[in-house]
Every structure is written in C-alpha cells, then in structure tokens.
Length: 135
Ligand code: ZN
Image 1: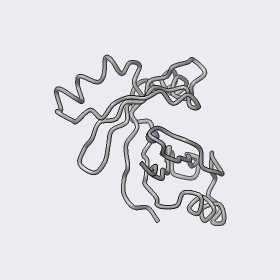
Image 2: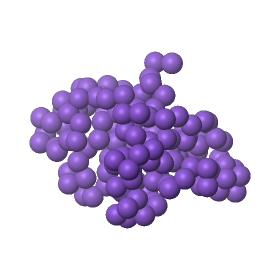
Image 3: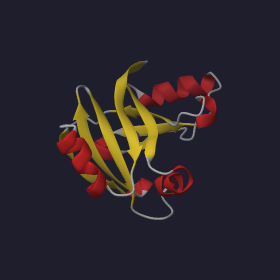
Image 4: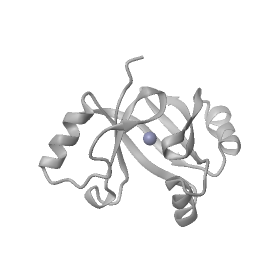
C-alpha cells in the first residue's frame, strides 16, 4: 500500500534563511512555496529525484511546528509515504489497531490529501501518509 517516500519534512525557523542551502549549495530544484492555513505552516518543496524535501516554517506560535522547534530545535520533522487511496489505507490501519492522529484525510499542500500516524505507533517517527492531488 505504500508506494514511495513522497517527501521528508524538515522543521526550520525560517525558509528564507534555510532555502539557499538546499537550493543553491545542494543544488535541489525549488518547486515553490505555499501557506497551509489549516496547519499554520509555510512549506517549501525541493525536488530530489522522485521525492522531495519539505521545509516547514511555522506561521503562528500555535502551530505544531512551532511547538516542535521550541522542544527539539530545527531538524527532521516527519517522513511522508505516498499511498494511492488514503481513506482505504487509514481504514486498514485502524482495523489493525494502529494509533492515528488523523482518522480521516485532511487537505495538505498542492491539493494533496494527508493524514498523520501517531509517533507512539511508529517508534517515535512522525509519519505522514499522502495521496497526490488530481492536478
Ligand atoms: Zn509533509
């Protein structure tokens, strides 16, 4: 049911400050940025082959990413696996007793559907599942 690693999320204090390292020093293709209002974050995507790096900057102190930065500092925040049918995958995981943060899909960046699994169920790795948008 997992098709590939869609992206790896990295929490940063400032995309403006962090972007030049990934784009210019490492030479990754910058695909653009976007505010995800629902999650109170600004995200920037950089292509790495068939996967991406997602830089996450909080837009508000109440953002989960702001809490992550306060507790752990900048660094790897989550891994996102791509699935073809997110609703079905979540139903399967729930049936198997996996603890979920999101029991139903919600909207992510670029028209994707996303859901997070609870780190308690994944050995401490915050895990996102995402289903690409139709555009
Ligand atoms: Zn993500």
